[in-house]
Image 1 (cartoon, rainbow, N blue to C red):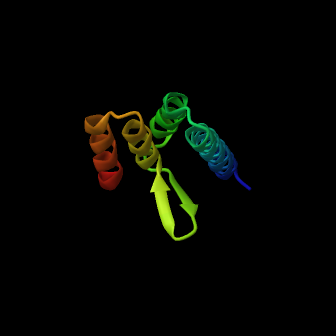
Image 2: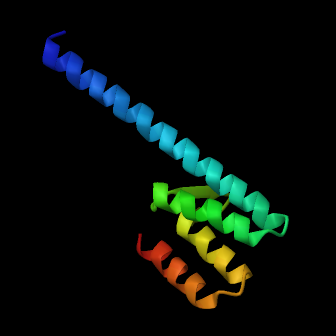
Amino acid sequence: MSTPQKISLGFLSGFILLFSCVAFQVGGEIQQGRKQLMFGDPKVALVHFQRAAELDPNFIMNFGVFQEGAWTYVGRAHYVTGKLSEAGKALDRGVTS
């Protein structure tokens, strides 16, 4: 293998590793947020969901039939806390991202 091929293979491997780490982190934030939302602490859940949305705004969780993105969860947490305007904005952002 030539030096440019080794460099590009190393770059590609590093990129894949970095991407998978970010996806793992985002998934963890979503899971933590879901747990907090289920146990009645939507403000803490919102922190997790917003962190996930900042890391990867296009992240999608596949649970059964539905696909829910990070912004969907941000909107849900805002809705539960009574912040309907913010909920609508987050849900709109989820539809457009």
